[in-house]
Length: 256
Image (cartoon, rainbow, N blue to C red; front, side):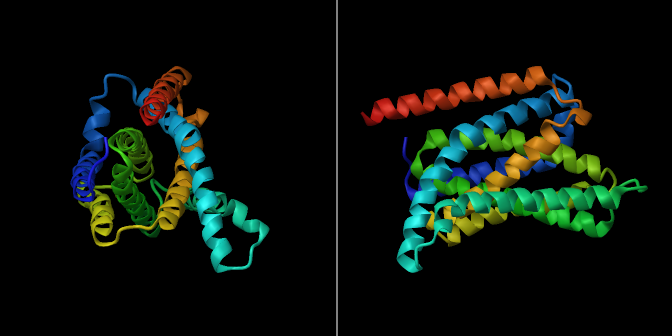
């Protein structure tokens, strides 16, 4: 099902509101989960991993060809153009890793990291939410099915990431500061309304977001010290892989 540009923006607004509500209600949601927190985190990690490996990386490979074609028209051809989006994904991975390292170093012998580190983390995760809502509007332009799959994966992933942020900053992360994360989600939607992204820009932003998702999966959702659950990770991975396979199969059949 394909939506008009206006329909995509309205649907993206609904998703942005839902993501903002998720930021505000995340502590209450975690307290009321029918399974232990580590199980829910692992479930979200499995879903996010399936999304990255079965949907995001293949799209990056396709987008990389488009970006390489644009670069070929603008600048002298170089071998680097063949992996530019993967380099952007690596930059996203490294950026989130560096932020995680700074947080842990600042937390040594303290109840929680410094206010400066808290500000950086909060601002970066607000940007993270904004990237999700900004890219979602374009995914809705391509079709409702892929956008719903993206929204489900990112919603569960954001819930898990919020838990890590709350663990690092149990005192500082108040409801008032959570409004910054809500503003990030809203800002992504406003930007999508004001600036219709080009294909190259969307590929670059998606690559950066994908690098951050991978780092968060490896560090926060699979780490043994966080008591991750192999069973729940496998359930999330298998279930979401099945959904992606079904969506891909039905799309191919419809196109045929």
